[in-house]
Length: 305
Image (cartoon, rainbow, N blue to C red; front, side, top):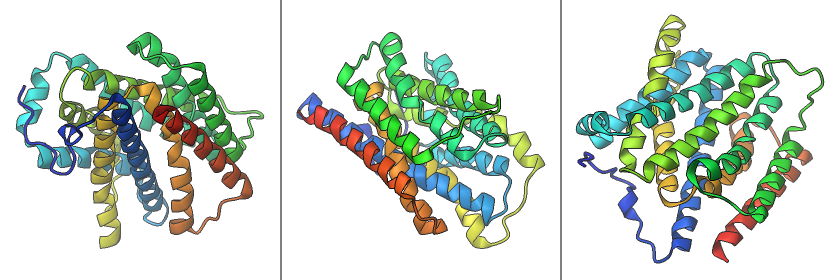
């Protein structure tokens, strides 16, 4: 199948692995890099909402639409024709929808819930991937890795220390976001086992662009400064590159192996919060981050051994 121009920086053919073990380790590295890039994306979005004063719907729309522009520049329009001819159109559409639903549910939840509650529930995603990876993809994990995932999640609880007393019924939105992200990860793995990863990359932002276009245009505000405009335009490129690394990671390793490294985003977010917003982490945050990193280190050691 013709897949258009290759990504000029990193492609799936960039990697030549001697063993399956080194292939998985490289995939874990790609996953960690992708999640760290998503931390930059979230930090930029938070800055645009706060200091930039831009509506969240506008930010989300530009993030998806900019991703499409990036894909056209990198792969050329011919690849969109190849995507239209794929026999897996239904899976591509569902995956793109999962990506949009994850963003939409997070936005709805934040209108009613505390930030620590939404973050905690979203980090259920690795557990959901571990639970669904076996029956949906035939990618089962052992009890040791599952235990490490649960321990990593306990580190998230130390950081967020959520108070669930009298929690709003909008908790269903946060759980929906976690479930949708888990399904997005699993569908990414499924597609990359069947066809070129470029196809998964270009179809991912389509549903989000269509769903958020009207709300964004209704609330549209022009950035007040060139710097704010530059940050806004960068969202699609940052998010697009992060998702490309995510697609490549799922090309070379099972989703349940990769999903626990979603927790890497928490330490990187702590650092960015400090650098950009001068918010120093608490001792609870540092303790939780250490637990998460220890869990990740164990999972990495399991892949090496």
